[in-house]
Structures are given as structure tokens and as C-alpha cells.
Image 1 (cartoon, rainbow, N blue to C red):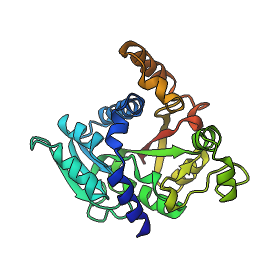
Image 2: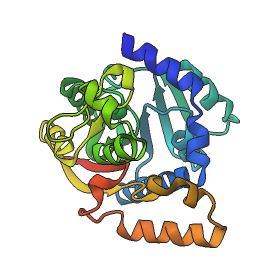
Image 3: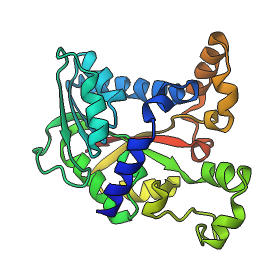
Length: 263
């Protein structure tokens, strides 16, 4: 598939690990991990599936905490990096696979399922629904499904206006009349609004527990965040965590985390 090839080319040349290790990337990582751990504790989760595990930033860390982790990743380059992080003591199975086809897993196989990247790169509603259906299917009843999205408004603000691409995107018909970005595989990232996420959830047997802004205002001021001293950065994280569930701020976050429970 052309999308798969574009993703492979992108991730072979993009250092996703460095992004998550940067100060501004750590805000998203710390927030996501906090909610993963809260969900795992609620149901005493043992078995975790990460679909689209990338280089293993989450999967490897969770496996080192003694969770039984299965990591599925499309891009072989990312899988190679993930496997290099293991010392053999972890209970982690790494497989190459696609979020749209999890037929290798039986129904209700996992306590907690992470879908932290695939929704960024699925460009039709049907494919996004299929990925979510697969994640729900392999999760046990009462288990959690955590789904990440890239949001529309930060791209309009930061890319279209701040970086002065307005004329380009208008000329290429990349904005709808109501300012929703139009993405194709060449753009690599599909962008969502909260109503788009709700429409997907309505198609599967889940209830939403929370919709969280995983980086909030952080990416609007990356240079400032990256330059903070330890004390100031810690206070920024504390502030962010105190407001990340405020629904009046969700759509302005570059990334969100939808926390669903299988009914």
C-alpha cells in the first residue's frame, strides 16, 4: 500500500525517540504514562497490547515494569530499534503488523490496549473505524482502550497561520469551508476534531471515561519549554496535569488521549 510505504520512508528518517525525549515531548509522554498506569491499576491489568508501538518508548518501559506486553509495529526500522532496547529480562513480544488486521489475536486477549499512533495515519473514516474495532475486539470486557489523536486546530494555528502557509493550503484545497484540514497520504498525518472522535466511538461497544489533552499548550511554545530549568519544567508539568482534563481546552491540544472502556 502507498500509505505503508510513505510511513516507512518517514519513520526511517524521523527521530521519534528524540521528540519524546525532548522537554516538550516529555509532557506528552509523562501525561500518557500517568493515564496508562491509572487505567492499569483500576483493573489490575497484566496483559497490555500496543498497536503501532514505534520504537518502543511506551512498550519497553511498561515491560520493564513487569507488565506482559505485546508490541505490534508496521515499520521494520522501528521494530529493530525497539528490540535493541531489550536485555532479555522483559516479558515483551514484538511483532510486525498492521492496526487494520489483528487476526492473529483472539477476542478479549488483553486487559489494556494502546492505540497511540495509528489514528495519526489512517485517512478514511472506514479505516479509523476498523482500527478501533480491532482494538476493542482484542480487549477483554471491562478493559481499557487508550487512543491518541492529532488535533485539527493546532495545525491551523501553528502551521497555516504562524508558519505562513495559508496561501499554499488554500491553493491546494487543503482546508474545508469550516477550517478542517484535508489530509491525504502524502501529508502523513490525519487531523481530528472532538466531534470526529465522538463519531468513531459511537460505532463501537465502548464508553468514554475521559478525553485528555496530552500536551495542551506545550507545543505552542516548544523553545520556551525546552529551555526551562528543572524546577520550572516540573512546575509546568504540574500545571499541565492539573488542567489536561478541562474540556474547554481539549481541541487546542496538539495531541489528545481518548480513554475508553469496553462495555
